[in-house]
Image 1 (cartoon, rainbow over the protein chains, first blue to last red):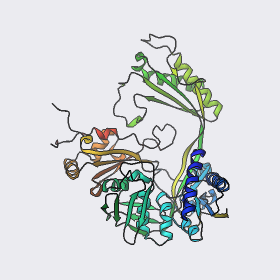
Image 2 (image 1 turned 90 degrees about the vertical axis):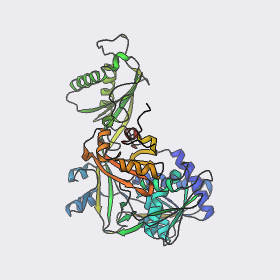
Image 3 (image 1 turned 180 degrees about the vertical axis):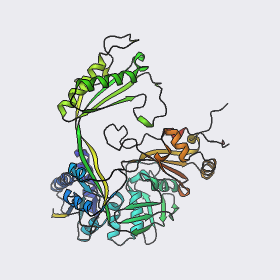
Image 4 (image 1 turned 60 degrees about the horizontal axis):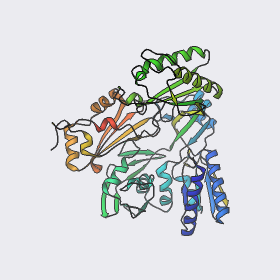
Length: 394
Length: 110
């Protein structure tokens, strides 16, 4: 997250929103929407209000879930695997460092109903954060949710696509989309295509407390720049929320280097395997993980790369080590890069060094690394249960 | 002899992206109705052809949808490494589309 960009863009948005008297809603504030992120964003909003002499009713909504709440749900069999492919256990819950639940539109609609001008929401279902205002004003939740889905990436659903905004207008039985910038237009292709974006199933999409049926949707070009969309159906279900939990997996150090000598390309796998095995011996009894990314071969696609032969004239190597603490990760990464630098191998013509390092010192400490510990659905008593609301008059 | 016709000759967009941290979803948008029908009828994009293109077992292709409203075919794979997990190499999954570009069109479209 860039504090500079968030402050700059929130300043523009707050000034414009207050001048127009339109509420401003931010979902999944600060990245993951945890308490730290929400408080950080609220701090920036207070700072902007002071500097710009803006006055408004601010509300913020937390989305952190106490671990005890998840233990209780697990005991009641109210946890479901979503897509993680592992069952939740008491141990995994206890390993979790940060845990948020994804809110639906209800907590945001509740603070808008109570008169909030600016809402900083924790972890939110993207399209529902955008649809909350429309739903709070009485729009059909299916149309609003589908519109939110298309608006969530701004002018990505326009052509040519861009990073600016899209405008949505919800009416009783359809919604209209139009890009904010006159340089762009909404087209049938650009809008229908965006319905597919970042979701597996283009026809049915589950969200907090609902399923959205898009199988009967229709798209109509109503003017050169506008598309009319109808047909989304919202079906209420039992209320389950998605939990995102992260645990600290270790500490990382990274070293970046280039390889230009072709004598090394032919045996790169053998060399990397040998160096990895040597380091494992050297650092006994300390366990660690090392990822060796070879750019120019399969650095981007890894196991999915169909081309196995190197055709480039130079390779980029990223040595990425994870161990129990930073000092150890740094030491292992340094050992591996040093061994590779001065390794002797058959066919070598250059004996003065094998790696062109990008940096000196050659290792960059990347700090803590996290892994999902929880990516599951949990049943809740009400849409508001996990999402405490705070307000302040600025 | 001209190069064999591939999916990128008939499509306007071929893209990949995360669909949550455990899935990689690919969207293929065909240029027009005729090209869309041709690709569907020739069976160029099937769960089998996609599994072959990526060298993964068939059950790693979790779904395939034909979407006439978007003149699109959508196919989803299990991610080899979860998004952001250690060892991961494409956080947004947005550079995993290339093996689809070169899928051969079985019966060339003139």
